[in-house]
Image (cartoon, rainbow, N blue to C red; front, top):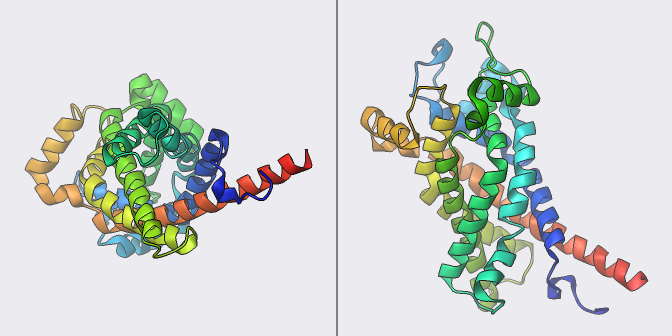
Length: 306
């Protein structure tokens, strides 16, 4: 193994999961204000504007939030967001290659169908672990920090306790079905698109397997993912943020949106969704590849010493 480049050695599962979790946390910290703006735009229209505040566009939303609630409001729910990524990204991204190999029996060059199946599988698995953290994150992001407006939650742990006490276990796993649907779509689109673009770039020798290649692949994956997943993402956000009784189910939430606000409601917050997913993908995949490579270099050095 001495003399082999880190990129030539398949990283073990522990390295992939740790790299994915760390990279996703870095990406969340960088892009969280865009995610918060997306949530505010997505829930706008389901009830009367609080304090007469209306949001217009991603940057208008961010500037309005800073002006009315302070810059800290852009990071409402960050703690829950990082908790989510640690147990979510490490599964959906870290396990992807292993699940792909499981479905192919270890054969090279898996088909697109196998990649899609692997992405859907790890995306759905990850939601089953991380759903409570996603519920708390969305509710914090939707919560307005205005004088005279009652806040639903004061801290992350208090939010978990409050939801459990008032809504039970079902409250913590509220919106699991649309979230599984959304994340199965996001995961298979994101990972499969990244996989295919990166392989095409390397096969045609347009770029080497380095940062520019990872950047282009991640940007393309972010755009395709936003187009496909945006409608489910809006329904998921609305349903998870809703008080008990507002919607009978996620399907009822989608039907209410369609009848009251029209089909364009499903693409509310599209620009911040793309800005967020595009930038998130770039930061995450670039970080993931670099962290994974660095961990493999360190692992090689330890093995050489031993």
